[in-house]
Structures are given as C-alpha cells and as structure tokens.
Amino acid sequence: MTPAGRPRAWFRRLPVVTRLVLAVAITMSLVLTGAAGLVYWRVKTALDQQLNDDLTTYQHSLGQAVRGGTALPPGPSGSLRQVLDAHGRILGSSDTLPHQPLLTPAELHAVMGGTSVRRDVGSLLPISSDTLRLQAKRVSAGGQPRIVIAAVRRGHRDEALRELLAQLAFASGLTLIAASYVGYRTARAALRPVERYRSGAATLAEGTQHPRLDVPGDRDDEITRLGHTLNHMLDRLEAAAERERRFVADASHELRTPLTLIRAELDVALHRPRSAGELTDTLRSMDTEVQRLIDLSNALLVLEELGSTDHLTRAPVCLADLVDAALAPHQRAAERAARVLIAEAAEVTVHVDARWLGPAIGNLVDNALRHGRGTIRLTATVHERRLHLCVTDQGDGFPPEFLPRAFDRFARAEASRTSEGSGLGLAFVQAVATAHGGTAHVANTGHGTAVTLDLSC
Figure 1 (cartoon, one colour):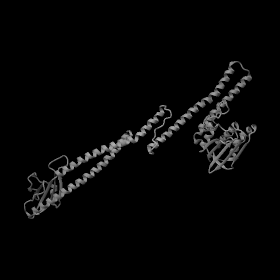
Figure 2 (tube, helix red, strand yellow; figure 1 turned 90 degrees about the vertical axis):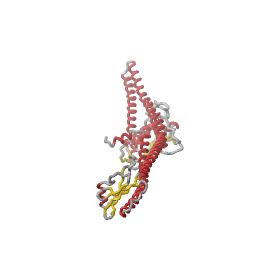
Figure 3 (cartoon, one colour; figure 1 turned 30 degrees about the horizontal axis):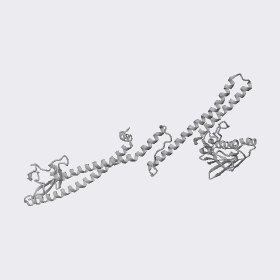
Figure 4 (cartoon, helix red, strand yellow; figure 1 turned 90 degrees about the horizontal axis):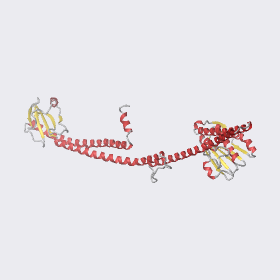
C-alpha cells in the first residue's frame, strides 16, 4: 500500500460516527482557519496602514527640518529618529537608539541610490520591547546628501494583533468543539435507527419468530425507506424459509412412500420362498416404485434447471404446430375416457423454448384429464408480443383453500398423498412461465377449472 493510501485505509476502518465527526471537524477547521485568516489580514492591514501613515508624516517633517537646518521636530508618541551622512555615520539620533546605524550597508546603498526603504525590526512573536518600523529616505542639506530615518514603535500594534490572534484561536476552538459536538449528536441521532434496524435484523439469525423492524409510519426519509426495505426483505426471507421447510417435509414424504413400499416388497419376498411368478410380480412392483423415484428426481432437477433463464433457448416456432405436438400424446387417453380435446391456436410464429413450453402444455392437459371432467379446451392467442394460453375443463374445480398454493411444489388438491402424481406438475408450469418472463394463474370458473399462462414471445 502506498503511503498516501494508508490514511485512507485507516479512515475507512473507523466507525461511521467517528468518520462523520472527523469530517465535520476537519471541514470546520478549514473554514474557521480561513475566516480567522481573513479577519487577521483585514485588521493587520488597517493597523499597518495607520502606522505607515504616521511614519510617512513623521519622516516628511524630519526631512524638511534637515533640509532647512532647523531643530528636529518631535514625532508621535513612541517615535524615534536618526540622521546619517553618505558614509553611514550618525549625525543625530534619539537618545534611546543604539549608537549604530539602523540601516544595513545594502539598505544604505539603496537609499543613497534614491530608493526609500521601509522595514520592521523585531517580530510579532516572541514578545519583545524593541520592535520598530522604520522608514529611510535621502534628502539634501546644504548640498550634502543626508539620510533621514524615521521610526515608530510597534508595541501597540503588535499587542493588538496578539490579542486578536488569541481571541480568534479561542473563538475558533469553541466553535470547533461546538460543531463537533453537534455533528456527533446529529450523526448518532441519524444512525440510531440504523443501529436499531441492525439489532432487529440480527434477531433473524437468533431464530426469532416473525422478526420485524419498528419503522415509524409518520415520516418518509432515507432511513425510514431503508427500514421498509429491510422489512420487505425479512418478509421474503421468512417466506423462502417457510417454502424450504415445506419443500423438505414434502420431498421427504414423497421419497419415503416409494422407498417404504420397496422395503415392504423386499421384506415379503424374503420372508419365505416365492415362486417365479410371485418374484416377477414383486420385481414389477418395485420397478414401478423405482420409476416413481426417478420421475420425482427428474422433476426436481428440471425445476432447479428452470430456476435460471440461462437455460432458456428461444427459437421461432409455429404456435399451432407447438400446440398440436403437445396434445398428440394425450389424444388416446382422452378417447379412452370419452373426453373431447379442442385446440384453438393461431397460425402465428412465436419465439419460445418449445423444449419446455411443450411439456408445460402437456402437463396442463394431463391434469385436466386426470382431475377434471367434460370437454378440455385449449386456446392460444398472441397480442402485442404476449402469448396468452388457457386450458379449461368442466369438472368441479379446485377447493378454494387450495388455489393460493396450487403452484407450490408437491401441492395437491387431494388430502391423501397416495393418489397418482407427485404434485410437481403445476410447479413445473409456473417455472416455465417465469423463465419466459410471464405468469401463471389458476381459477375456478363455475363450470370447471381454468389455468392461464401469459408469456412474452
């Protein structure tokens, strides 16, 4: 990790509240520093301007006195003066000044060249009593060049700036603390519902029954919408867990029944010697149950495969031909049962996966033959790239309490599980509809049952 990346990685590992408070503190520090710097600059500029004006006025009066050969006038409070010749020798000076020129050789040379020099002696910090601001200018006295230096003490100005810095630091510190505290309280208040949601969601892992988050109903902000989303997720998870439990129980029962029958046949066959005919009957019975297990396993594998649309391969196919091919295997069974199969399919081309849709239609017809009565009618139409397919019969229909779970795996309308079928037919039909981007619906019409598929094609 690069050196620049380490602080970012460290920052990302901090708790969210800490990161928010740090962000507020850093931002407020920058803002306060900028504001304090602006205030300090404006005050310093005003004080320096006043100091420079006083210094220029005093230097001008000193220059006039030197040119006229009169006594040097007194300056403002705290002012000092010094007069040098062209070689830097002191010709006159205030009593409190040291007996050495206030100008460096370079400054002396610059002033003799006609340049005015202004500079400070001493600094703002640390505190010192010998801080000055001086201004030097060349004048002519009796034909001889002279250098007039006017100086004023900066004590009051420096003291005012130091006091200003202290007040700005104190005010900025208090503001930063207050802003950080407000940011902390605001972040805690904003994230408190998130922590409450996290604690509520954690109860799901602890086996709590029907866990739900306490979401306020009188507001609509980001946190509240998050709570509703989490509750919706918990609803979905609970429903999925319930389906899984029911699936495991039903699958166990479905597998146990044929396995129990096979075990019983084996026990009877081994109980005493059997004739060849009896053994043949036993093996045939066992073969039937084994085939039932195979069919059940294949049905479950098909349902799992249909769980992903990656296994769907759409291809153009004639709708009428698809329906005829799906009905053909059931024509003889319908004739034996004295039932009528009527198909009404449009002569149009649809883009579907006939490998799955054909068996789904066959399942619907097979259910109508086994559980319904009267004429079986299949209609298939296409409108706005949607295939509408409906299979109806004239039986008694499904029990009303069965309709909401008709497409569940292993769901059966009969109370007994010993009837023919595995209860996966309608589940397979719904899986095919979902894989095609559609829906499946079952309803009692008053004259029988209607199962409808609505698919994209």
